[in-house]
Length: 288
Image 1 (tube, helix red, strand yellow):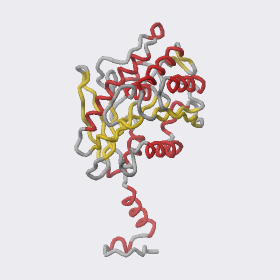
Image 2 (cartoon, helix red, strand yellow; image 1 turned 45 degrees about the vertical axis):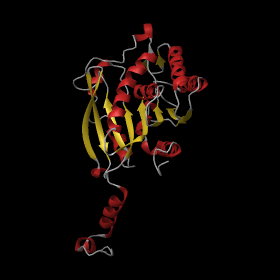
Image 3 (cartoon, helix red, strand yellow; image 1 turned 90 degrees about the vertical axis):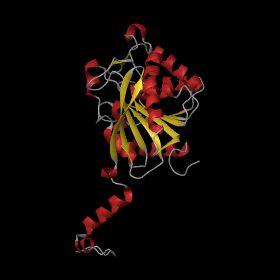
């Protein structure tokens, strides 16, 4: 059956109904292929940090989200980060009309500079300092992206997973112009193996130090079967952060695969929580 669509274009009047409907739905909802992919860079402490951008269609100004990757247990895996890092998540968020920047931090990527996030191994466990090193790159990326003519510098959110979530919390522990919120997926450092975190008390103390400086609302999401930072430790981190003055709502997310540390990939599962948080902080929807 031909589609009955009130348009002059003969193509629409003669094509199958389901094809015409699919095209109209794509146009109405902002197709992924309409996004632009760009690459920029910013200098941090003498090293170049590459930032991969997912730009929505249109001229903006768009709210800005800095999406930060994790850190593998095996140092050799750091070279694998690059253009495709968190690409599906970034594209999904850009479809909401958000300008996404994915910084590949110092020490990661195919041609990495010196790794800035070293916490001294289990012997020293300088988790606070490691997070603040990540935060330098995240904050620099946020400032660079927010300065674009298509960006809204008054609406910035930091989102990250694992070491990137930890670095986002750390970044928000100091004033950042335009920052309205943080989304932390499974943030932490020091995982040596499944359900094995080196000196977890030091990690909890570092979370408290970030809470003392935090001034924006945060959303913390940890899967119940996270094998890097399990439910008990995740709750301890949250309690320490909020007891020190931080504002964070904790979400115990459902199990995801064999290791919930990858829960950020379950976009359909967390979309409602994250979208509600965005509206709460005035990141999406009508401007405040």
